[in-house]
Length: 156
Length: 71
Image (cartoon, rainbow over all chains, first blue to last red; front, side):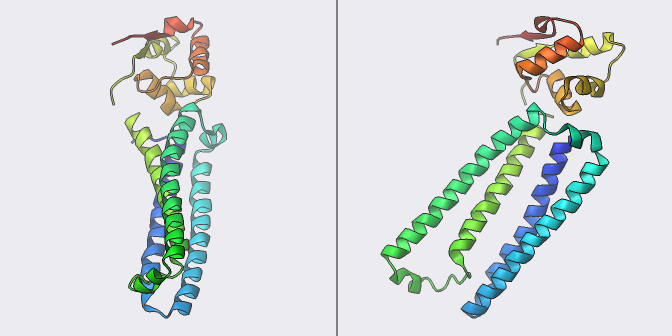
């Protein structure tokens, strides 16, 4: 497979995001069995771990890629890379906006119907509003990377 | 992916420029080798700036290197 430096870099980001935040969300869902306060503390710990891991993994693997492709890394993004980045950003932004509106809608709905909170105790994800937003952000990143890779593969 | 309507003679021009490689052309133009490859295969239409740079490398005018072929 003939991949440019930028395409390899996007593959690293996509795989790291899927593995680290996939594991994070699976763990957060399983926290529902804990008491509320303990679940919130555990969720914060998991989120810090995920953030730390994504930063470390990106630094290590992107660094290794840049060292092994020094010339390409110095060249930076060319016009084709920028075009695909722009197209990918459009898709990612759309997903993020949908997630933000879902979160806003939920906040407004619960403000108007506070009794609904007690009725939905079956869904026990700690810091649910924050997690809907975080999930939207991660999903938008996955869509952004995937769209870019789609354009690279289509154009290869 | 279907090829784009802008055709080019880059492969031919590289051959007559002492079999210049895609990498050499990419470095002269300031893009990646993959971008040159995509342009050559008519799967990506370059900006005017890159099109002019490619033409300049081969000492040709832009319309001698790129041709628009309407369907």
